[in-house]
Image 1 (cartoon, chains in turn blue, purple):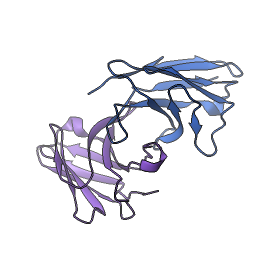
Image 2 (tube, one colour):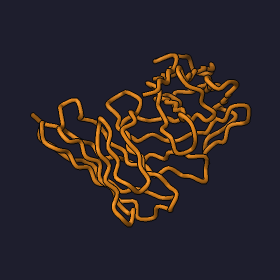
Image 3 (cartoon, chains in turn blue, purple):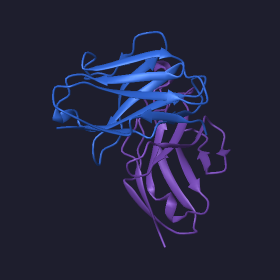
Length: 116
Length: 111
């Protein structure tokens, strides 16, 4: 299947700092990317939908000023966790849709964020 | 939004077929059913998706009932590496094709 790559795979940061996570579609162009977070022993929770060249659409309850999403090209979306706190520690996963709305969406390997 | 219901856990003997059920009784006519699986601490892996016809690929088969209110994912010869959480998802067509994950089924393949 198509490849979606996230960087970094894991990151430890100090409380109050910001962290940027990159999501790249390596062998296809993705007009739509999705960002999820997952806490231990829980399912994935959709945070936002990222569309190339436009503002992201955030799910209810997700703070857009804290989780900044940029989708500047058809192969790259970034999630920046601003002023991170320990409760932001989680597994962040991106997904990119292969083509039209009824096609497959492929997921990155995830980024483990630990805020200390 | 269409929601799905899956059993929280299932066991399967290695080499046997694993049949994972999913109910999606409120699905709309243009909404697809997707199946993904997640092995611990990894991103979800795409398995298969379909609208109303049965689908088969190298990983699995997807059987969708005629009224589309339920479906079954079939792994024909389960191996230990198929142990994972399996998610049945109805894609939300009128919201940009979002995939909303439920709790999934934790499949344990045992020797």
